[in-house]
Length: 92
Length: 372
Ligand code: SF4
Ligand code: SF4
Image (cartoon, rainbow over all chains, first blue to last red; front, top):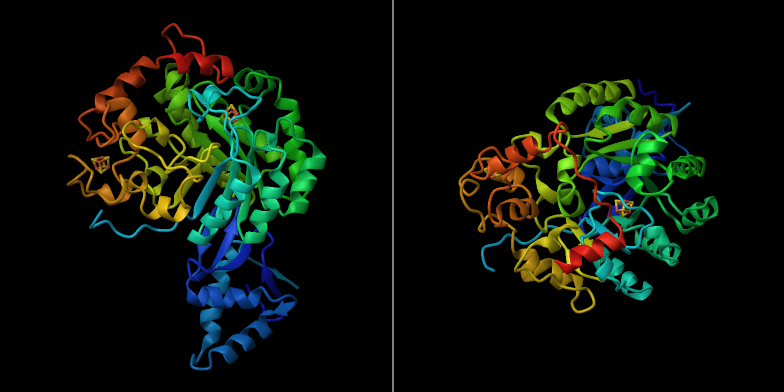
């Protein structure tokens, strides 16, 4: 389970970057690439900020997207998937 | 050509830096006449290729060959590619590599190293490689991990090593691989010449498949294992290169641009060279890259087949090499009127028949092929 006090970062096995030609964020790994949709890209963009807790991440995203009423459940759903796939690392 | 959808981006760039290689794998994907082809692009020409492909959207870059580490300018190419934003992959046999060079690649920004092995034992590995390489390869694989790279180990599977799949995966685990690619031998070029000795039997595959799946389960989350059944036994072709000129772009040592590394074997197609044309023109407009895009070129049974969007009629090179016409369905497809050539090859590859000697990939044998 993801705890809001945990520190979150992009897993070192992946490289996260913006691809101008594809107009999307991608995760790169040996001989492969995951093209991210808009919301996944936005969430991971905040995960890429160093020394960030899940709580701050939620706060920043809520500020960036005030029109989304309950951003928390969407973000958590994505983080669960991202964690299961090994894209992000959570530490105490 | 009107009516063709505008092409996707060449996301994957394979830079075949050289055909020079100290090994002699009898399934090598290099052309049979590689020994005739001595021209290599220089550093500047490669950098131009990298810049142009990146502008077209290329993201993954593989340095391969031959043995790419025989190029003394590899560090420069890695460093520049990394600055351009590529994810850089080095595809090497490890032979001739030293720890200091692996560190230099790291300093230049190399993201990942794939080390190829021929087998899981020194005896078979060195027989297939045509040189004593096994000990050194293991040391190199360990060094790659020690220096903090993610590592893919690649084993090309065929009749001689398919029975050792468990030992192969144990070795990979012991060496600390993050990914293992159990690659199927593709029967073009050298492998086609040696097909009778290399094609695994159905019984071998029936034994190997459950073992591969059991290991996938066992090492889940630790070491990812890629395994596919050889297309000869599948009844359906693979979606070769994800479609012609769709996402893959290969540049041969002399600068010839190819939709896949064996496309040069196809007749009546002139593949453009990066020294004469911009990559943008090559990718988007050159007749060779347009040739098998879309499905206009297809014949029956592919033309009206509901599966054509899935496999694009299979591999053009395989269709040409085995049926004489590159616009035919890939004969590994059971719907192909030429499928009996595959059945015959399977029967011919009977290990009980007297076996011919393997023909190794080396300059001497290559020159023989050039004469034909
Ligand atoms: S397949 Fe073997 S012989 Fe061919 S380039 Fe690779 S290591 Fe060299
Ligand atoms: S007939 Fe052609 S398109 Fe249909 S499955 Fe076979 S190869 Fe693919």
